[in-house]
Image (cartoon, rainbow, N blue to C red; front, side, top):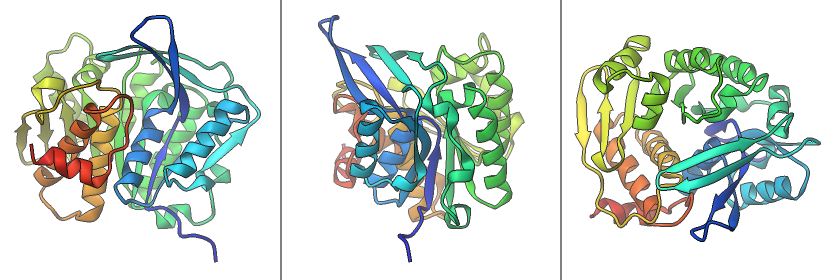
Length: 303
């Protein structure tokens, strides 16, 4: 009998981040991609996890495959394709600003039919988000997978992770994912990108109208976090931390939320909010998209 299948799968891109260094002339290459980072954080926090996507067969794809296994993610969900890699250039880190390079790249050729047998029956939480949902034909496949997961009773999370690469078809896809999700995690930048020119309170109200039953996990940088459930609104100040950079903080926030929810689904949402906030703070204290240990999260929570 093969290894047990994961309880959590993040669907979408795994890519290589090229991060501009402080001298302005050098770039540091690191494995990344928002869904991949969410899965890596959840795995570090003890959740059997996988990142489901496709990467190239070149040295960059090989590094992603190695780092996927090092992170404890189920390698059966990462497909290798004879296509160019998807690249993200992080030209600013405070806050992160990106541009992407990937024409007919490997990520676009992800094939859901190649997922391991029984994956859906084992799944408790599925995550969707980021630029994969703006890249056709991949986006259409992912929406279909999200609908299939929802119909099977899987708990869905969605993070729009809005970037300048989002095209004309992305708003309709994002609205569909909001309608499907049990939890929508988004930042103030995401909200402004989704509903440009709409005041914050009104914009959050529109998201609530698209899915009245969803939990909205809204991050506001130094202003802290806001949790909106169908029944309540909870504001949480930012965890005190000496910020090195905020790369990966949003992914860590959601990874922490998922780990907390899977450990105790019946707990009050405010408890998951506390753990998510501490997970994000633990990442901000380190350079790059760090996957914190539970001990690091617990230390951040004591501040």
